[in-house]
Amino acid sequence: MNPLLQIDDLRLRYPGGGFRRRLPEVLKGVSLHIEAGETLGLVGESGSGKTTVGRAVLGLAQATGGTITFEGQDITHLPAGRNRGDAREIQVVFQDPYTSLTPALQVRGILSEPLIAQGIARSDAERRVSSLLDRVGLPKDSADRFAREFSGGQRQRIAIARALALEPRLIVCDEPVSALDLTTQARVLDLLIELQRNTGVAYLFITHDLAVVRHISHRVAVMYQGEIVETGPAATVTRHPQNDYTKRLLLAAPTADPDAQAERRAARQALRGRAEVPTAS
Image (cartoon, rainbow, N blue to C red; front, side, top):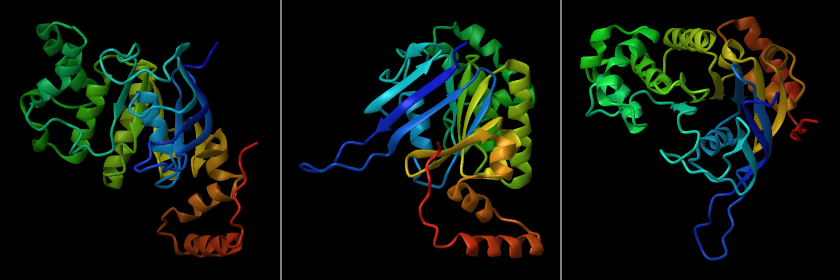
């Protein structure tokens, strides 16, 4: 059986800004796949290209090489929006819950809007709002409030409910918990895991935080300067990394344990001078 999402040798270079100016490639031959019902954690530092992969999958950035196949259909050059053949099947949860929700709409409108855009009758769309709120653990009376009246964690739950409205097969989660405090992060991650268990939705989970990846992902792909440098089961990559760059990411993660801090300082010192980061075989 083919994977739900297959990315092969994906390359992307943004247009130059001046005469004969060529910007460097953002993606340099990225290949990865996601099975139905699976979470792939895509991790790397800012500028590594991980968000660009998500944008390409969503049709928000156009590849200059390679292919993206979803459920057997080549979607590499299909634009985002209503005319995209898989528009119902791939949804997104963005990083910032404070700016990703339309401030002029009540929650009822935010959740019914994608349904109406897909041709579902307004009355039917509004009837589904209560069910969506229940699935993400928000009371039914939330429908009559504005997004600004909710906390950051509650807003992200609304964003997740909006992504679920069209019953997608895949949700691109672009740093969905990085703007939240640690306690709220854990609750939102647990919600995503529960929703996956109940619906079978797959996640492309984009983050810079390996601790988050370890919590939610089945497999992990590590990006460095536009390339995948290590892939494998989440437990293996986050506990026994083979690539020096992955080791550096783990050693940079914050910890309150003084002994662990000292061990990480020593390990970082040992890695200094090993600037070359090998690619995955």
